[in-house]
Structure formats: structure tokens, C-alpha cells
Length: 249
Image (cartoon, rainbow, N blue to C red):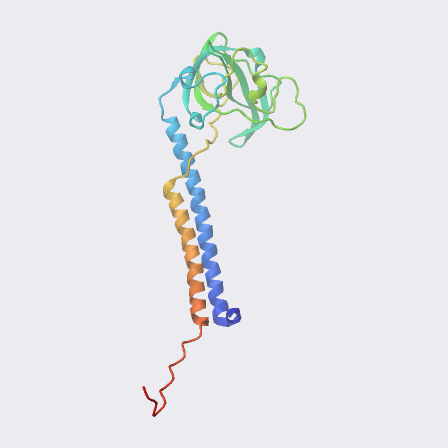
């Protein structure tokens, strides 16, 4: 039966079917990517539109980081432990190469790592934070997993690894990173605020439906091609034989 596929007509129809299926698969994947991007934008916008609340009313020390915490506006009031601050080299922001500046903020409820900002290059030590009591406004983000690599000089770390900091910093540690957007007491150092990371976001259902629709079209093209081929290869029904003359009922 499959020898019929070698005819010029079916070779052409097969090529057309494969092109149609490939196009549907590509368009479905494109719509899936759009669904992911739109879902991420909606999650960031939704979290960012919430009213700013004190950190202690959103979470507590040692609690797990929840997905809805990403980009959540919060404030925290305390004093910086400047001697425990560090820089995270090899980071980029808007095409610039530089470092993150991280300092623990000690509050009455617990200690929170504050990503105070981005600085060009790799300073020998973290730029000094404001002295005395300070209120930090910003958004929440998760800690980072350990990053392999060579050892770094004192005052530098490869990332914000909360599993390590919980054993080194004083007080109970919040399991979040506060990405500072402003401080009630201005500080020197020319720091640039670091934007929030992309959250784990649900897919945009509208674009997800479009992706599924394209994949269904691709399956339909395969089904139609197979149905046409089978119909053409099936032998025609033989004509009924004429009754013989003189035959008795």
C-alpha cells in the first residue's frame, strides 16, 4: 500500500503536509513563549501594584520564600551591620559590568539581606551604608543557589546564598532578599537600584489556548493526509454479477 507514496502526486502532498505541520508546531511554540512572557509580565505587574507593607507583616524569619513574594513592595526599618556587608562581582546591569552591594539590615524582628544596588567595577569593599536607623523601601526577591568557582578575596561572595548567611549573620534571618529602591537616609557610593528578578509565573491562558489551537491544526493536517491516502489506496467495490438467464428464484 505504501508504494503509492512514491508517486509524484503523493510525494508533493506529503511535502505540503510536512510543511503545514512544521509551521503549526513553530507557531504553537511561539504562542507558548508569548504565553510565558505575558504571564511573567502580569505576575510582576500584579505584585508591584500591591500596597507597600512592612516586611514583618508579609513574612517572618526562617519562613519559606513563596512565589507571590517576588516583586512584592515592602519596607523595613533597622540599622545596617556595615562590617558584614559584601560585594558580588561579575554582575551586569544595562550592559554595564560591575558588582552587587549587599548589606544586612538588622531589624527588631530579624535580619534581612539588602541588595542596596549595583556599582561599576569591583570595589575592594562594600560601599558604606547609612549610619543609624534607616528605613529601606524596595521589593522582595529570593536568595541564590551556591555558584561554583575559585575562591574570592575577603569582602566578596559569588552570590547571596542565604543557607550560608544564616550561620554567619546575627539574629534570625529572613529567607528573602530586599532589593532596595530607596533609603530614608541617603548614602554615597553612586549605587544603581537592581530591578526585581523574573518570578515563576503562570502561563497566560489566552496565548496558551492559541498554542494548543495551532498544534491541533497540525494534527488535523496529518489526519487529513492519512485519510486521503487510505481512501485512494482502498480497492473499489466490485460490480455485482448479472443474473444468469433462465435462473430460477
